[in-house]
Image (cartoon, rainbow, N blue to C red; front, side, top):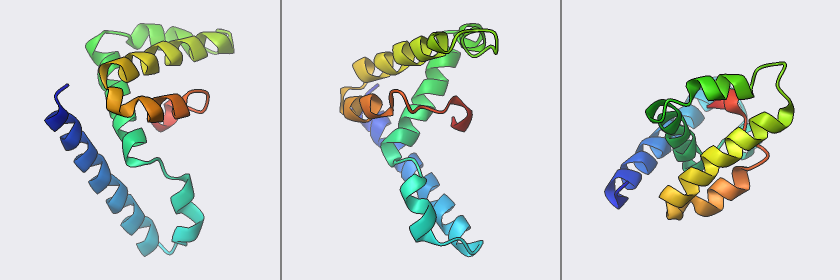
Length: 110
């Protein structure tokens, strides 16, 4: 991915974050309560890249098997590690954020 494409993804993620903050504030939520729990701009970009990578590489079935209730938890962790590692290698600017997300990635939030 070229730097300009990453900058575009970051701009879109920033707009999305600002819209979510505004929506929740208008709904009466206290920003001091919810902002620390929101994913950062780069975390949002990584979630987008994760979804795109699963689709591009046809990993949907592998993901489903990893997260199947009868599969061991380790299988899902290995799937996420390999996927996030690929993103870190493909996008060095996101490496620090990728590694900070390991072990706490919620696939349902993506």
